[in-house]
Length: 183
Image (cartoon, rainbow, N blue to C red):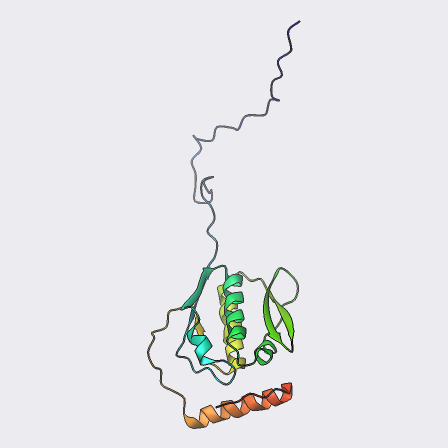
């Protein structure tokens, strides 16, 4: 008795489309979609205000990315926390995201690890607006950009503007019950 040959199940062959012209709307099978990326540059010469430690900011990389917008945002926000004179103060200024996919940033204070979730975003504009608002809250303008910074000494703000910003930060810290040496 001869054993029966087992053949693989037959499948419907793919139609031959080589003779069909491709127009601009068709994507060839070999093409892979390009992921949207952003590069966030760090201005190490920025006026940092009362929340961030200049020595720590100087140790940051020149830029975060190129990365997906949500990854670049996470890295930049985490850098602000890591460069804080007091992490609790900076952490309290970050707006938490709700719903959808999230990425986390963390801070250590009061003997505990604290986490905040940021909404995963795919918009470069959203990332830049978020960082601009965060920097405004931190009283440090021009810390991040999607364009490289020229690394030279920038014109510093007037003593009156600096003192007003310092006083505003002091009031906020008092509201949070925090003390920082502003020397």
